[in-house]
Amino acid sequence: MRMLDRVLKEADRARAEVLDLTKELVAIDTTNTGAPESGYESIAAEFLADRLKGEGVADIQRLGRTPSRENLVATLPGRRKSIALALLGHSDVVPAGDLATWKTPPFSPTVRGGRLYGRGSSDMKGTVAAEMVAFLIAHRLKLPLRNGLRLICFADEEAGGAFGAGWMRKEHPDLLRAGLAINEGGGQHHRQKGTHHYSVAWNEKGRYEAVVRFTGTGSHAATPWRGQNALAYAADFITRVHNEPPAPELSKSVLAGFGWVQGFETKDADGLEAALKPLARHDEALATEIRALTRTTAAPTIVRGGVKSNSVPDACEVTCDFRTLPDHDRGYLMRYLKARTKGLPATITLTTTATSKRVPYRSAIDRTLTKALAAAAGKSVKVAVFPTLTIGFTDARFVREVGTPALGCTPEHPKRDKAQNRAHGANESVPVSDLEFRVRYFAAMIALTAAAGR
Image (tube, rainbow, N blue to C red; front, side, top):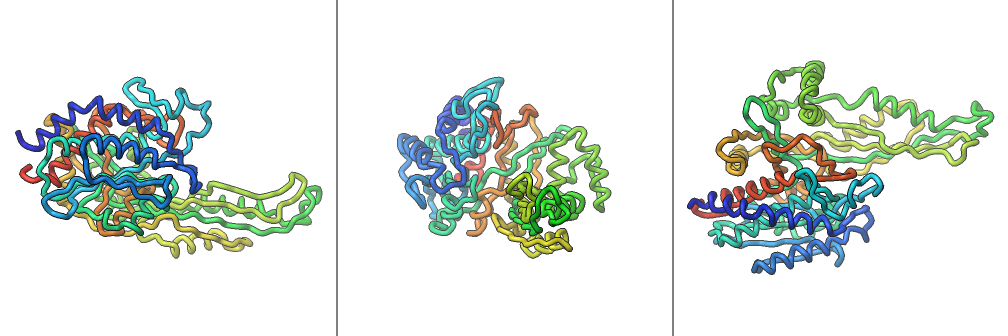
């Protein structure tokens, strides 16, 4: 039996295993509030390490900036020292929020209607479980690896990576080097004319936070004309940002990836919006993706001002979130902000969370991904991939910094329902079929990239 057939057969046998493993991971509360003492990802790292040790995996490392925030690195060696494929994930989750909005407790995983509910089920403990099961399949079958295979589960992804991938990039860069790394951030599929088109995130947007402070003059609220209301300046700024967002940029490299979308052709910004409106009526997710990929976004998200209801405020701060296209750097954003605050008494503080630089496209990698997806989907499903950007940011940016092509492609099942996973929201869930499909896909990627004699 060919190696690809062997791993797919084992993946099918592991359907109950991946669901059970996801449940066990979701039940571990690794809530990351952003505070250095939160997360406690070491509990998840220890759990995964114990499971790997129980299977006889020898090369397991738990590395952390602090004892409570460990990253897990497991390796299956090949004949050569290099690593062919690294499977990336993270163990931390965002806070559950108002528990009254959850139908079941967020850390009590529950299967209902073919979906597994619980905080982290979608982002991204379900994918971590699928990666680990595929990793274990390679170990159990004693696949003859030409180059090594690595599984990495980071801490602190949800707060920027200072205790996770960012720290690993600084202290252990060699562990992040591989011929290819697969992470979250892509894998959404859209069906047109019988073909399932899967997104592959070759890059991701940058993220910046701006705090714009407006200074006025305080006065008694009974005589507001004696003051200069800082809230009014802030309102003027917010209106300008709303009415004059960053202009769309019709990059040929981005738009070329959507050439398969029926009726989607555009040469200017007006044409783009005209094409997106009808598209949104039957595929809102795809229209949103294209809209996000053709512009830097600016969103005022927090307003702070005033100290007393009977006093005109002399200061007000507006916090804005920016998600930037490649090459839109700090200079671009400062020019944008200065134009929107022209004539207003404002000072601007701009903080960088993640930058975005252009990544060279490699068609050979896309061909391998297509083969793996086709193998996972089965002969009756026609599969294609298209390049895109992750509209948020992930740990992959740190892995790219050491020279590893780190792509986002954690695919959905071809026949999955259209219900949202609600990652970061109440009642987060993942289809059980996605978990099973991802085990097949990751196992196929291992056979196609790391194994000899496939």
